[in-house]
Amino acid sequence: MYYHDTDAGGVVYYGNYLKYLEEARTEYLEKKGLSVQQFQARGLLYAVRQCSITYRSPARYGDTLLCEAKLLKATAAQLIFAQTIHDKKTNRLVVEAEVTLVCLNLDFKPTQIPEDLKAQIL
Image (spheres, rainbow, N blue to C red):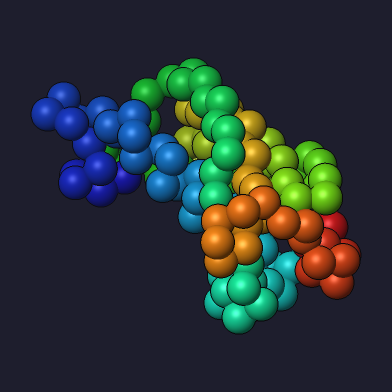
């Protein structure tokens, strides 16, 4: 953990976990051979529609965290991820989350995920 991620008590500020979760989802897509630029080139955007997060244990300055994203479900226009953050050294569970992304067109209207991209995501 970096000092700038923590509060005055050396504990990770709760809002920073959302950034870590997003980074894990980005890495998930990259491992599938996809990038944000590919979606944008096809006129598609993704936005978080819903996020349910449970803080289990505080992370502190100096901790190394492992952030994971697992696709639970893909609907016509949504991707639903189960995500966790663990302490690398102890495997202590820090955060659990379920995050729903919605596929949007350039007018910010929900739109179907193209089948070729959906097949690659799965």
